[in-house]
Image (cartoon, rainbow, N blue to C red; front, side, top):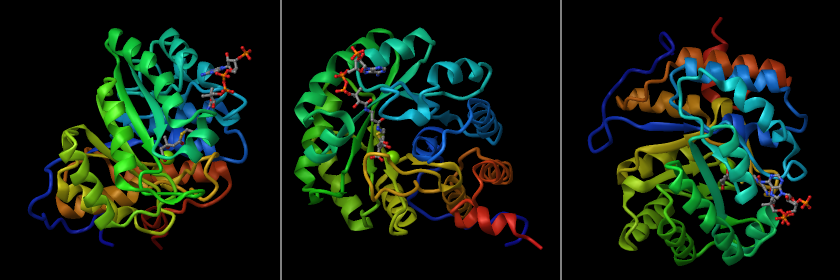
Length: 311
Ligand code: HMG
Ligand code: MG
């Protein structure tokens, strides 16, 4: 390490700029064993914006019994007034959208699954029932001129069903796109993807009429493949990458899911590749160290560890 930045050696055939969709406050904190105080969540999000992140997923308007860690969404959202970033929120159904609209949210995300098992575990619905639940949500959100993201979980493997056939993912992706989702985020919920699999899925989605410009990637880092998978996606032309500050995360309804790709690890690589993100790595690392102190354990991000141990 020099002064906290790698030497930038631009690579060819990569996008000039990547938009990081920061999910630590939602995907990260939804998985904490203890409920993080609302004030800490609010400060975390303010700090993330201060570090240059422009899309910060704030919370979820889901059933509080299903995800008690995010049951304070109504208290948290107003505390984010003045944050200079887009603040998307998760909404699974009409009730979730009502709650989000009542607080003035402008961007929402529905979250479907490529597999029946996870759809049941996460939404208490079959895949087709979940699509029927999302359809009026997406349509009403669009009528309200809100931006709608469609998450698609278990795109590569599922803890109950094993490897997931690509055509199964394409079918649900098409359905989410056809109902009007502005962008899709391809979730490797349990982190089993490898780069060739990522390329194949992206290619097949393009062939099914889903343009790369409407696709983001969402890698969990269970097997240490998240950065390699991200590079494969960037080489394919993807410019939206989900990541979680400090590598927080997991999913309460998928036992084998661990943290997301750490935002710091992503920014380190993108800095080295000369790809712009607008993120200040020093401020972001300081934020993750600050949160780790409050959570009582160190961040799993290799970059956070390296940058915060400089004797
Ligand atoms: P359900 O039990 O089938 O709900 O749960 P229901 O529709 O039968 O309604 C039952 C009661 O819940 C009703 O109340 C509703 O009003 C209430 P009652 O009439 O009995 O008094 N209710 C709600 N209350 C507040 N907010 C709501 C809401 N909806 C219903 N939005 C449900 C269905 C979808 C609600 C439930 O399964 C749920 O909340 N699931 C959320 C699970 C979740 O948040 N998982 C984590 C996010 S996904 C993820 O992490 C993956 C991702 O990161 C990508 C990746 O990594 O792959 C995105
Ligand atoms: Mg996730």
